[in-house]
Length: 126
Length: 126
DNA sequence: TGACTGTTATACAAATATTATAACACTAAA
DNA sequence: TTTAGTGTTATAATATTTGTATAACAGTCA
Image (cartoon, rainbow over all chains, first blue to last red; front, top):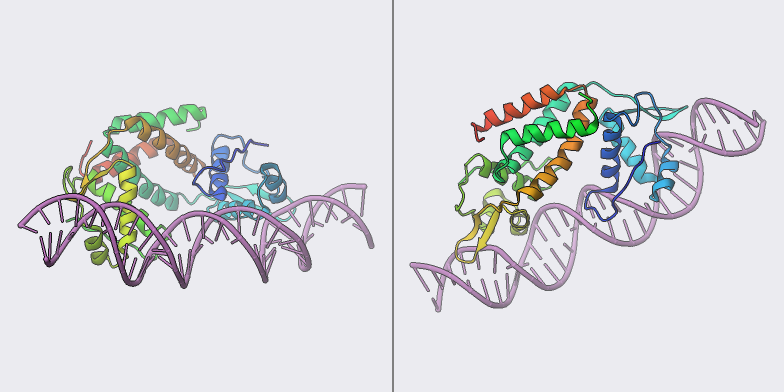
């Protein structure tokens, strides 16, 4: 199972930290397509948080098309290829992110380089 | 003065919508460095929201180094060049964003293209 | 003085986040 | 068939965040 580390001092909601780390886990193949996520009770116990907080993360992941739920196997990684929807969201997020960086004198080239850096760090996913 | 349009049906907090739009406004030179933002009361009236909501947006912008406060002139656009800090935050945001896109089969090249597209749309800021 | 700044202090309502128990329907294995 | 494991749902309680509402304060400027 992948390692999840939650920052209880972060201002980011627990269920969102969980969601983000699971998405990163999928992208970096620490969790494979078809693989089962730990049960809500297991993961909640392991982290030391409530079952419902994990359940909320799983529900969001399901709505966003990262997992499907199988009665027999629990939450299973399964990607919905809603590429258009995702592109739309990405564009909106990037608008703010690029405005922020531009204000702070971070050039377009530096952003491109930063992206490549993150990709390399992930170990060449493409 | 720049145009602010708030989506009251959005799940994004009003003060964050405000913050983001002002940052985009600065990046796209709709508000220039040294220029004064409308007073909290003026802007609140114009949008039809409470003074404190605008004040919160301004406080966040100040903490993040986008405006400074002048007793005489109110909130003035002034960028703190805390480039290192901003880079760190960008990297963290990009980690999640790129993981998300990678899961949805959006390639590295498509992300680069999307970024260039947003930049072009802004009118070539650098 | 008078009108305007941001700031601060309360108070309140609504929504969200988190925890806590408990039960339900279903599945798989003993 | 019992038992233990899934996710799901319901209900309740608490804490935090968000947004609004008044009101006052100290400083600035015409």
